[in-house]
Length: 289
Image 1 (cartoon, one colour):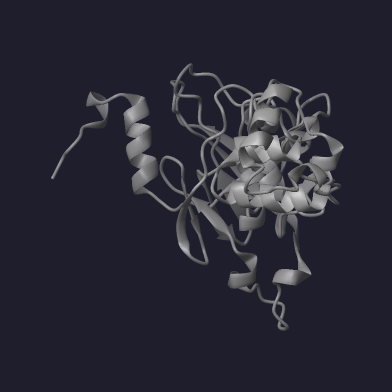
Image 2 (cartoon, rainbow, N blue to C red):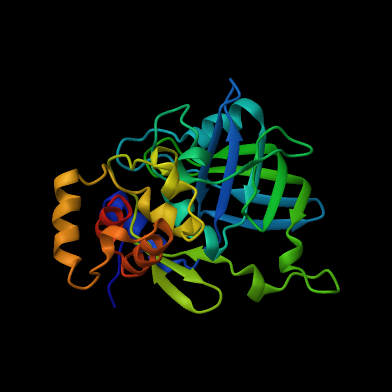
């Protein structure tokens, strides 16, 4: 059995061991506002429920390992003392992942991920309309666990009001766990789905993805593509060129002889098939043809 002293290995390596071993972890999809009222949305898997009376949730935006900077969510929590914690179902996992991209301060991750801002009733931060359960919280305390990269910051949240989608409730008003279809975080690119176990979601680009807000309307407003599809499509640094699109169409014209005359709906259905195999580049070339 391999044995390690945390002091003898790098913080990054220790971080990887911890996240791969203590898993799967629930995800706090945290919505905050900065001091100027700009929305921010980001997921955190250092998260759980710790009390029912009072109802307390705790999540931890850790200091970045690579450069020891703090995250916008922590800064906003310190400034406003309010947060909405949204749960993450499988239907929004790709959009959730896209929102974790480190966009500049003031950039609205709701827009980038294609998720809908829903006004809260007791706090100022917005809820994620697509999330099946949303907790409006005040922040009772923030406990800093250290000052070096990788140190956590425990944000202790008291639930003031919460909302549950009727679609995931049983007749007796209890939550149907199968319909809720939660996902949880594991190590590396791995997530766990309550229904059928582990799957992978590639981490967002270290460079900035274009986001859903930068997509052509015909794609962004598709009646075929799902939120998860849009999340995958938004995680590209740039769109293919006209020359790349034309070369792709020529390559697949034998398989799809009528590709140039296809409707948007037909193209979107085929693009979904490419996305199911993780081929985002081909999906974009088809969608833009």
